Length: 312
Image (cartoon, rainbow, N blue to C red; front, side, top):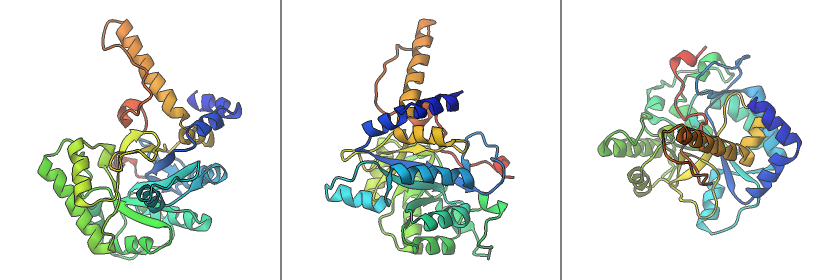
């Protein structure tokens, strides 16, 4: 029903109108796994996107947006330079091997940049055994090795960032544990690929004010939360927002996500639920604020690692 709703709105031109409204903001898109598996992999968080659907997403992006490297966004922020309207950045979390065998060849063919965020302990545990350059089902749950990451990092347009060392929720571990997660991951990236100031994607999209301060003080160039929305010139570099793409997003739903229409949809839905709960005698009165909400509250795909049960 939701897909039909977005299809109708796109056909009526409403998606383009909302996109125009957000035209001066930078949209960061977050994928996890892109697979060549012929059928969508069942997974409760819908983190696996088929390669055929992924290419349709890119078709839309290339028609309507200017896809830039994360580094260009950061350079513009440093120089206080305004980016062109309709700017987007591609990011990929977890560092699964299908980024090398599925995503990178597609991006290279289209000359599109992207940033991959890797879990450094999982990467360090991957032996540098030889695997074929072509995709195989194991790539959907096998992590990249350091030699593969170095190869990717040397490819024009591909940047590599941190997704922490072991992927815990940094808001529930102790302060020392959170600091070690960020410090050890940064040290591994510096050691293996020489990037002294990589970007960071907080595990599960969650970060407290203390965690954000740690990321800044350790020297990360920026950091992404799971807050839903886009970013402008005033956005906190250590509290950047992203739009997570679900594995079953058809082109109409994808267009709605990128435009910002789904942000409004989910906020209105959340407000309606709070109004209903209040009317039935429980909860707090709803407020229809336009500010970003945590990913879980917005009802979007949560930013969690795929479970072993999701692997074919």
